[in-house]
Length: 217
Image (cartoon, rainbow, N blue to C red; front, top):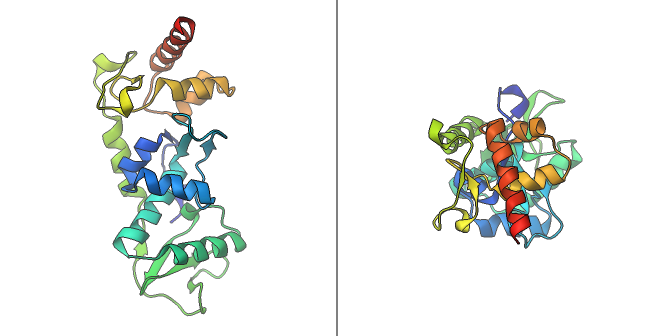
């Protein structure tokens, strides 16, 4: 699976987004983060803070791949760790950097050096279909981003959404996460690249809202 081969938007996703898109649980995401098995792109040192785990599009594709391997093909975590180490050894930086294959619960991948589907275990060639989840992830993302014009430039909260945290209306994007990006030195343009479903008005409203909250605290 090659993310660079697709015209995929670059986005930033909260832990709740990642759960909805990938089908993994928060417990799995947090356990993998603690073990160093899968660390989100933008992770803050104090993980117990809200929105301290922000995932990139590439992260979400990788997580969806792992979800498919675990839940659809019943690949063990021991096997996932073995393959992760081998991919790193062979120069792959991420689970989303190559196409993956499964034969009898063992993972195989497309070797970019040889141009063949190579077994990581014994060098034999795998003959079963590719796992390719990018399109599925993009469909899920599109569903998350559907908004009405009346929601542009507004924030709201709901006790059933993101634990009653303030979000940009029509999204699950916390205003606090936008503020974290801004505090980390991201410009409005850069924030929009991370959240392409938002408008400038959305970002400014979110930042103004966070400033007002800080002043009233």
